[in-house]
Length: 121
Image 1 (spheres, rainbow, N blue to C red):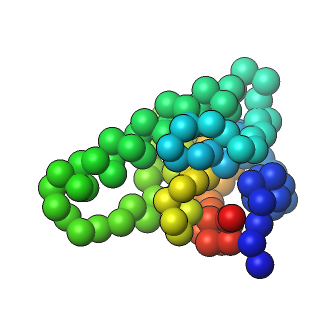
Image 2: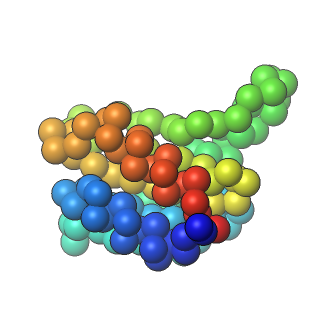
């Protein structure tokens, strides 16, 4: 059963209510299709746009190195936050998730994103 971007954000919020921010983003344009932030100072739209460049550059590097690989997810570890980028099956969208590392287990965050990315339409 396919999930809309808005439904994916809501499902992630249910499973990770203490998240910092989440967004479903169109990979080509960097435009968020749905987003939510639990911190007023954290602009999920701006984060989505910058993280689009991270994904595009990693995909270019894989192609340039002729690695014949696909990106499973990208993890950025900050001082007290984890930022995860998870591509949809077709690569047309990705889910961006920011969590406090003290509040969220990395394995749990990855599992939640994997489930939502798999059904994202």
